[in-house]
Length: 300
Length: 300
Image 1 (cartoon, helix red, strand yellow):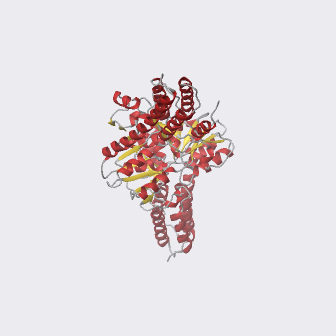
Image 2: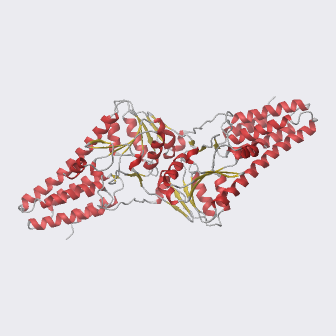
Image 3: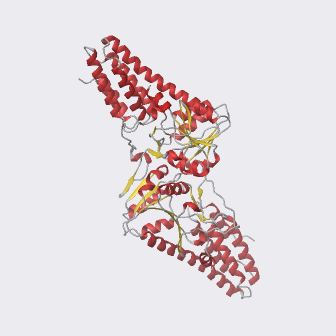
């Protein structure tokens, strides 16, 4: 029997193009905590079945989003440890585990931002591409430490304009450029900083299209590139399928012409060899390969 | 005594943001041919002085445009060979020399396009950036030879939309992308083809911002990059000053925000090491250094 409220939430998750993967993962956990408390079930084993099924459906809804894969898979595993509890105790324990996941995700982001801000330090000019909530939080943390920004508009939807608006509110001196000017301006920066949609097992970066171009230009100009994201964004080998999502062509506002196909792929892949530092909640890493320490944090 | 018609034309030359450098150079030569015939002068030496002065003012009006430097300097040198002619014969000869320059410039472009089309051959997918009249002519020449295009929109003014419109008219199958997607699509092309605003003495390319990013991505993906421009676009060492022109910020359509400076530099520089072939009217070259043969053609 389907629950209309759950189905609505699942559908919203599937079509959300605004929120980042980590925020959506926390929403999924919130939905599972709610399910643990109110999903119809007459005994514990039935509830466990319902929760596992809902968890799997949420994971399948956004197969390319690593935080959803990671946090929900961990939660699903934790359910097995609750076998044998009475129904009311199970409801409460499963909901608590989901809320723990939410707390872990938030704390990982906060610590990642602290680590990045500490590593970058005072008085730096930072070039970035697109609008990452993690990168935005790093700017906020360094706003009284004379940080300056070079931001791209980030076509097609120009979320870079929103980044510039926020930086302006914080009195951070900013240059706003077209994506095409990345090669001209990267040499004026002390470092390039990117968030992540996800990281591949070898440390390669999946992020907004144009990130690869910034990485190439930074590498060519000797400007270091740091990627800053909590370890929940790491895709484990063999889990989920990497899908570089293509959005609607009309976002470009290009003319409709016979024989001309307008393309709008949102993400590109930056090879690990172009990245100088990976910053996560465990610290600053010179390699993008998943270390044991990072693994532990991601799956604890 | 200033000539109002000449002053108007000079002003138009200074503010023209639409025409390419070669076309403007031919307009300058047309203006000098007209000056040779009608500029007030009572004797030959006076006319030579007037023409030299006008030529210098045209050169100074667009110091960053190599074809204007090259074609007008060559014409100015040719005037010295006309010393001693009677005024009517001088008028006619100086005008003929200017028209010769126009013919040479046009012929050089036509031959360059032929050389490029021949070298590229049939059935290729060509990625390009911005709208170059030379590259457009290459597409036209190959339109019945199963050429396919990947074109960038080219912010801020999206002249790539006009390229796509022309390619659509010629039934050339085209993919139109944001500049930020260059790194995603370059690997789908057989080659990258760029025109030039100008070439530096070492073969480096001055062209629309984003060209350097295309070159980096092509190099990284093993896709060859050809630059296609007549040798009149070569900047001679020590002549004129390289100026990467910055246009009005409002072209970006970005919000006006305190502390945020919107930048709009039109050209970037692609190092010669990222270019695989230079194609001009003399042929296809594996080096960007000005060869003696090319020099001869440019200054003959």
